[in-house]
Amino acid sequence: MEESYCSDCKSVTAVINDHSTGDTICSDCGLVLETIDETSEWRTFLDQSNHNDPHRVGDKSNLLLSNNGLTTFIFIPPSSKSLRRFNLKDPDKGLIEAFKAIEAMCERLGLVSTIKDLANEIYKKMEDAKSSKGRNKNAMFAACLYIACEKLKNPRRMKEICWAANDLKKKILGRAITEIKKFLDKSMDDGKARSAGDFLKRFCSLLGMSNKAVEAAQQAYGKTQAAVVKTAEPVIDIRRAPISVVASIIYMIAQLSGDRKHIQDVADATGVKPATIKKCYEEIYPFASRLVPAWYANEEDLKKLWRP
Image 1 (cartoon, rainbow, N blue to C red):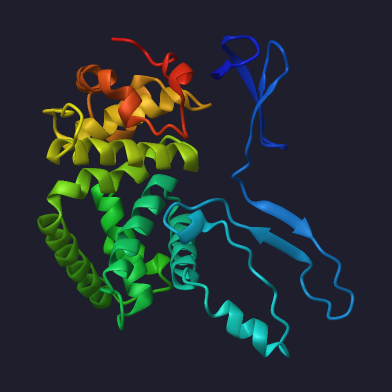
Image 2 (cartoon, rainbow, N blue to C red; image 1 turned 180 degrees about the horizontal axis):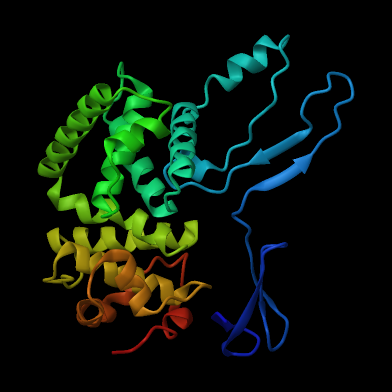
């Protein structure tokens, strides 16, 4: 059973997660500690006139989309030109279509969600850099999935990926894979200093952390980078690999969230050894009050952190 700090009991207690309501409840006193439901929301609306599908569903939050994917979609009657023009302004329309296509391929191949998430992330990078413009979209989706499988050590044959991509030609897939790998190699060369921060979102996603926790972790990591360059206060000099700093920041933020994580959980998600996370955490702990955003945790909350 999960544990969390209860403000009424003044201690860490076992909590009950009610997924039907999105409530996190203290098992001792019954206090609702958190009310957040990030799963898909199903609703049914009556439409007797046009006999359209009355079901409306909103996807769960997605950190790769603007506003974390928490967007309302409007059903557009064929006669409504104004609403059609409004819907065309959605900046995530292309990404949503891409993610759905990648998800469908993953379902056909029985792939785990971590592979799907990485494939989505690769495609998002291509889209942000405008590198996917004018290319065969289906081939790009399939190539991103192929590379994600490779990177997560669960490789699939090109023949399998082609089948999942509606019998895509192997030659076209191979060309797309080569193009994406060249782009990824170049982007890594151009941005090695910020690559660890780029992985932070995915690590948090693997741990199932909330959007607020992810934002807090990003801000905290950003402060470690800015502080080394210039600050009026004493320098936060953390002489550790960036990926180790990211892992220790995530561990710190996770302790302050409603869903506390063990150091081994963070190690599994980031690939950093628990001993390394612990040593890096010992170095950043003295700066916790400067690193953790005040809107996320106050001085009293920081006392809940593990003290080295």
